[in-house]
Length: 150
Image (cartoon, rainbow, N blue to C red; front, side, top):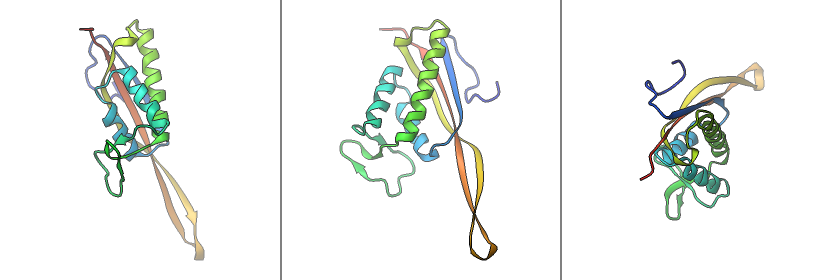
């Protein structure tokens, strides 16, 4: 299956992709790491708190000059990345509903944020020169699984 970051898709799962998002690669990697393994409803609540800047996303990678946040260690509030992840989780929830899965018992089984295509732009400078202005896009993928309630 071209485009998916997971090779075998188990039973009772739903998947969603979002390609070429214009968000930060570093922010998206850290957001994906924070919501991996969460229940879908908990992840949506967490991302909404980040959008309101009430709870920070804890950074585990790309820590240079990342300030400490109270109760979380190094972290930030990546609003633009969280909006893309909220759209992705909304898509996977509707995909699960279409497949007949119980949307209240969905757990994030797998989530990735990878580099996508690069937008190449050039800024004109003095004396006929040009400076590169490149932008990496991000591909997001999520797999949710229906878990049995205990």
